Image (cartoon, rainbow, N blue to C red; front, side, top):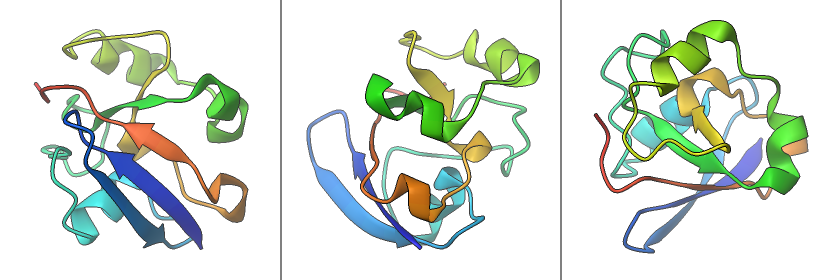
Length: 106
């Protein structure tokens, strides 16, 4: 289990427990965190779970797949540290991770 802190664009923080193996998108949705929509249900077929990962955590969150990169190209506010929350699985290694959300999810 990992404590993940989701930070809304307006600065509001939501620290929640996410079970090992559960995606960060599912963790947000299951804990009522606003700002992550997950319209495709976690299939990397949209970009409505777009988040920003602190560069210090990038190695622990894994590599972006080609599919994820393609979907991120559709996201508003794309940055080098952009990820799809549906493609990152919680684990003890991610305990304390802070993810930030863009202004919109499109």
